[in-house]
Image (cartoon, rainbow, N blue to C red; front, side, top):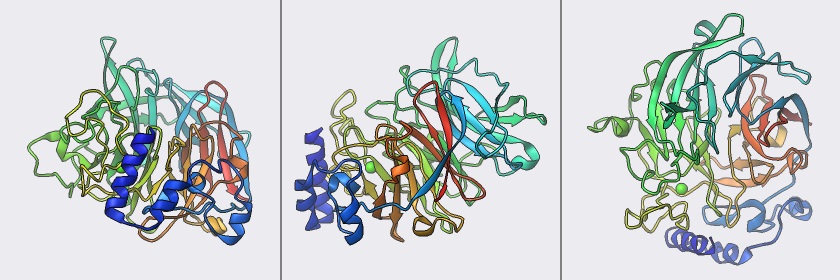
Length: 423
Ligand SMILES: [Ca+2]
């Protein structure tokens, strides 16, 4: 992993050529959780281990304002994603293959199962029932999409996006289009299955996918793994304006961006058309990326097809092999947090955090709050004490219509949905 980190450093230095590179190369080790007190007042960097890097420079880790964190519902098992229904109820996916309805958005909400058939699901490792998004016409159609694994004859087949319709009494859901988008690769182990859907302001459906821990998939534009796809949510067809719309290959026509490792967070910056994704690095360099259609994000564990297997010592953004690859807007540096979701804070009540990108972390068991420059580069990082190693692994982040942040934990059998609001 150290070798990979150094390779990445050299690659970044070669292109960005920032004097600060030396400083953060030497920085290392140092502050883990907490310890941002003095630095917060002066606004100076703690260390690379504190705030990660952006544009080749350390990101200052500064103190976070107080937040209120409440448990909305508990007793859940690996809740992977959630969505806010128009009447205030919440729909939650559990990775083993269950849909759950929460009676409301506040603490004390009742959790009830929604009857739905997940008999074809492969619930294994990181795979199963994953991301969830309501379709724009949900109020009338009651339709939503999920990302889920699929088996045929008991054999792992693919990851697919399925359209469901919720019954009028909220008690059941049935598939109305299966798949809307299919053929995303699936590793029988479930590893790196992605998969996050998100509706963009232009009405298209974005789908962040995983490379399934296969070396060649991310750079192969005929393969749907390690990509962000952009489709028409009504048909599953390539969205108008996709960068490879003229390709003879039907998979390539679905692609918005490629060269990703395992995209699990997709968030649109309020008031803009900027789409940010969070993906996990191997033992270094979790990334937050700003998407640009048609661009390569530089992950290639096959080293240009010169090696077999899955060589995770390559850089998360290999600017030597791919000089045109897009550097990350934020990188965790020499350690990883396992960034697993993304949502922007908005609504007017967040004070200094208004507009920040919230990124929950699994391994890091914390919430990262990033202030971004207009070009998306991370400018400051905050880790609120209320969400630093207090609830275990944090999976997903979604902003409610009222502007509160909802998180899911991902610890196993006694998981919770959290409501986070300005303190
Ligand atoms: Ca990258």
